[in-house]
Length: 137
Image (cartoon, rainbow, N blue to C red; front, side, top):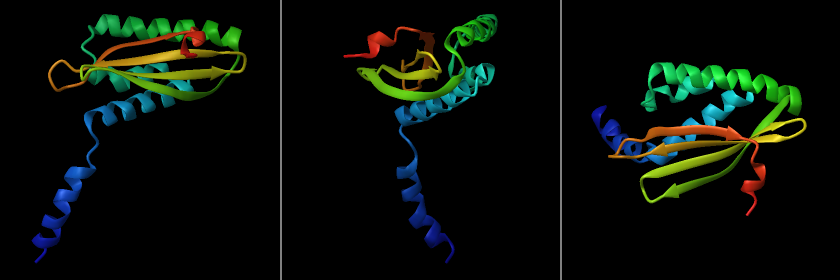
């Protein structure tokens, strides 16, 4: 008797699992939550399982980000939040999420790009800059 309700629920669970692109969107949102909290190392650690980057390059990226964010904060003021801007795709192979990291005096554009070579999404790169003008269409 207890198997029947379970058998009725299993098909519903299969439909409730997010598509891989939705999973990458959720991962990107979590990344930016850490960025908003200025927890840059924690943010990059979320992406590490999906990023085929050599360990020393990965550590250098974190160190450079932490160091440069200190200077940016000095010029732009305190972090006040983040905004999702848009998602972009190139066929079924590339997926990019664009966000703003907002400060008191300006903002930075963050781009998180994923590549799908054969059914598994990998981090292709993460970049940030002050090219906010490029976001206007």
